[in-house]
Structures are given as C-alpha cells and as structure tokens.
Amino acid sequence: MYVVTHVDILGAANTEKATPMLRQFATDSRKDAGNVRFEILQQDGRANHFTLVEVWRTKQAYEAHNAAAHTVQFREKVQPILGSPWDDVMLSLF
Image 1: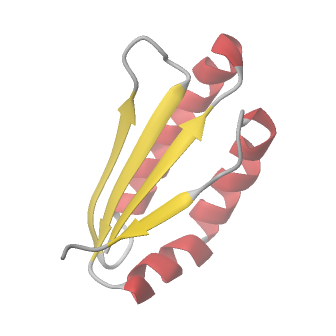
Image 2: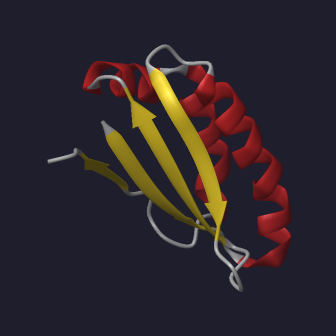
C-alpha cells in the first residue's frame, strides 16, 4: 500500500519549527511494523511544502501506524501550523 500526503506549513518560521518534527515523525514511522519505506520530500523553491511518501506491507499496518501514539502526537503538534487540511491519498499498483 502506498500513501502520499502533501503537507503545507504556514510561513518560514513555522517551516523551521516543522522540519525537525517531520524528520522525527519519519524516524519513528520507519520503526513501525509493516513499514517498507517512509520518505519526506521538500519542494524546490517552496520550502514550506512537503510530501510524505509511505509504503506499507498491508492496509492494517498503515492503520496501526495511524493509531500509534507517535502519529497522533505528531498530527496534534503540526495541526496549528498547517496551511491546508491533512489529506492522505492511498494508492495501489495496478
């Protein structure tokens, strides 16, 4: 299962605050059972725009990741500085 999430952070000061939070979230997420890959990309020329690219062995592994304490805590911390709603897009190969 593939998941792509675009994350828009409000302003430069918040981007500086969010960057280490995103890095820690990626580190924690890579330890979750069923994680195959977890990458964070930063858009060239728009430093406040990030894309999370996740690969999970199963939908259940992804759901467990979403329920994990580190995921819930990260989303609570980042919510006030988001420029747009959190939107996970689930994809599969065909």
